[in-house]
Image (cartoon, rainbow, N blue to C red; front, side):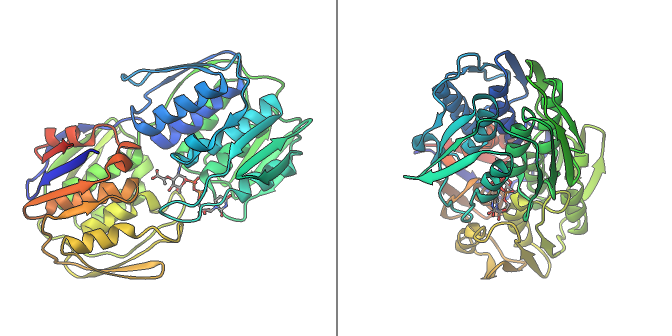
Length: 417
Ligand code: EPU
């Protein structure tokens, strides 16, 4: 099993190009099920979750190709095996995203129920409730959801909790339903908007994506399209923290700085110097890092997917900061590993109290999920001596060649087996 080895205390300098967003690419790939015509996707990140989704689509009968240069071609003309099996869903919860499109186009789907994962219980009750309101019947047995419908009909659906993939799943179901669907208290993440743009290019009628209320008027059928995946705001934010924590100077290119307003605002409060451009930004780290509290909320607030990385930065702050996680109930696993590297962190329920000024020292640590892995890399970059991160398959699910990108910025980092 691969590991990442880092020798810390090197300033990162230079320019890094950001890949396409995994969390925009996954629903886009699921949406290719909505038409028998060819769909071409550009800027797909070449990461494990994308390859798992390709495998899932192939198992359903989609002709799917994903190239290392980020282009993908999909043709769901002969999709027939309307099932997302346990073996694939267990490795990637986002497999549930095929439920809405399969139901919309083929009127039935059988999906393994995703279990809990390292960061929380993560139920899909809101996906199922929404589909039932639209006229589907969802039965859960033997660890699978079996959903069937004679016809999906537009409905008014108000989410009791903001859910990203829930919003995406129901939007994909609603585009082929009869009549109008309104999704209220919808997620307004840029990934949701990117999916809506793709669906509109396929002929769907959607207004309001990117706001809390999305209105979808169903159409009879959708056509093929060419669609570009937005840049990965979480990868961009991770490199921004890499610059700040190493007191480096990094230009983060090929991204959309507007998608990072809260993250960059927070980094600037913490003392990093940020210069904004149209398609990138520059982060200069300062020797003094200010400890600043943060609370995660749905977009446009500070994202839960940046919480672990921000915690690594706060271990180097000048005072004490409180990090509050409101999205997932168990997303502090990285804290225990950071403590093994010398951090002073106390977790109390949904809050982590991080005492700054810790001297981090390299250690053998274990990644527990994707963003936790990123936070351990960041801590390793700041630590004295050698850090070895185990279980980097978590990292490979969502970061494209992160160790190569960091090495090009001057980090002493390599993959070992
Ligand atoms: N929730 C429910 N019922 C549901 C759906 C969600 O109670 O039916 C709860 C969840 O348990 C959680 C909250 O609602 O407490 C928000 O979860 P959400 O559904 O928004 O999460 P998700 O759609 O499963 C996506 C991203 C995650 C990211 C979250 C929050 C994808 C593929 N995944 O997950 O990304 O953390 O939104 O922004 O888009 C990652 O990339 O590392 C990652 C975990």
